[in-house]
Image 1 (cartoon, one colour):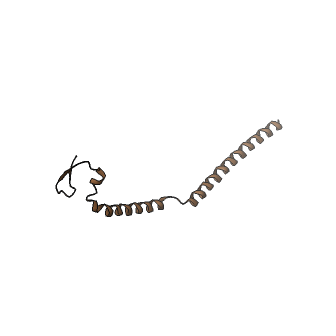
Image 2 (spheres, one colour):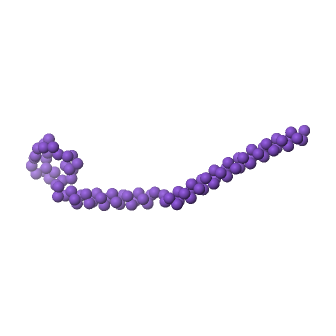
Length: 93
């Protein structure tokens, strides 16, 4: 594979990893890797801010469970009241 030097200086032959071709000279790799690591750390810190805190999730889940239980209880009460009303109508005849 013919490879053109990243800075445009000359031409060489041989197999070259495409990852390193975009990095420039090998002396630049540590500096570029440090800047990439810094950028990744910044992205990670921003992502952590977006994630809900576990306590918030637990509180929200508990609230949802309580709401669901209250709805089921209200439905059960309505069904029981309907049965009682039917029984009272039958008994009144």
